[in-house]
Image (cartoon, rainbow over all chains, first blue to last red; front, side, top):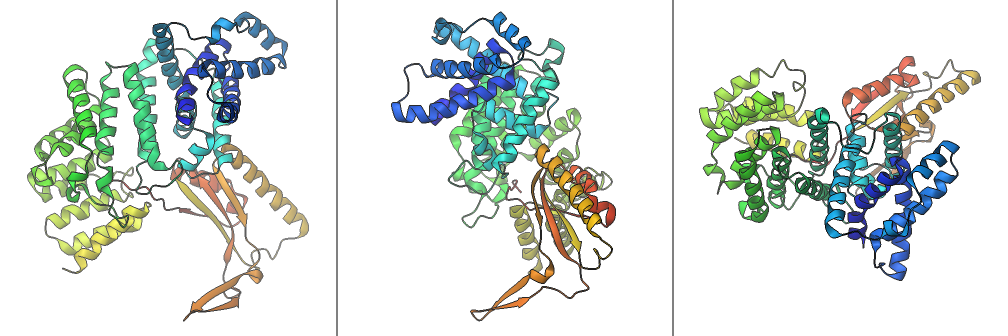
Length: 409
Length: 120
């Protein structure tokens, strides 16, 4: 039943917002209707038209709310018209489906509106499009439920203050708005990139949710290469999950992972997606990152990895989206193709870049390349520096372990 | 990212404070707390009791021994701590600057370790 409610959430929210406007009030009313449904349906069973049930229940609350608001709101309601019985029955399958698609897309755009911070965009998307409860989202981000509720309320208020509407962005703004949606989905996926799991909705399940939402977006926009690219990237990354963490919880680097634990089906899905996108559409950051992940995931073992291809892809990525993280990754690929000194020289260019100069990954990669080059003591020091800078516990332990290994040599 | 803001003090820190100063200080801190609880960036605000009430527990060979007070009188102790959840270090620093104690002495800002791990 929980799955059904989550699936219906964006559909019902879309239908309500279309009819009544006032996204924030519709969202509130829907939350109440969902609570009522959870109670009633578990006692009396799922109704024949669950979607209609939710729309009616939420609409009833909304009209009550609107009636008690100012006269201006009463006039808006009169314009919209009372909810007729025909509105809650499902119209023909095709029209309902395309209306659903439009609504989900509009909801995604609304939740990722530029007036909101990324954290707010993520929370609102997970609730309104993902159908997760506030408690579930709070637990995934390790904040108290009240705090998450607060953030969502403020986000909805911000949307209202910014005059954000439930409508397709204008053509000129479309690429930017879609990029924001993709960014939110990407952030959500990365948030779930964790070593631990648990019984409630954990950060780990955020990756599943991110994949689900991105798949939906891909269904809505099958011709968009970046959407396909992002989905492929997520699948390639998720495919490695089982091999990334050892039994005692420590991180296993890509080169040492047991590839028999990789999810071949997800890899195949990713390959299909990225191969299609690369032939048809304009290159973008997600497609390139997916292509790089594909090269890794298609290699039978670490030694067979086509690093020359990866290097070329990073060079392309650097040209469309120059940033220090790309340079870091490119340095690794460069070292694999032209030797560690070449990689180390590239790293030197980052020492003055304050975006990355104090980050733990710079000395971590440096340590890796120094080790490759046989400069053991310098490598050990670099790993120790990286370990001190790390704010991720698993990464810190990994870096300390690498330093310890070198101490014994 | 989560950050811990910490205020250290001892008896000497508060030496010049009269009742009116206390009322003002508490009101300012309460206003700070409210502002950032409302934004959803402050997750918790905790004031610790005076060092007089603190204990140290040490277990040696299975036997627990409890002693009074952690440190010497002259050292500053952790007086209160605030847990933030914010987008960046910069934001954590901005919020710390808004804390009244930052204008009086200083506020320490420490990142809290998290359990998410990237592929190495």
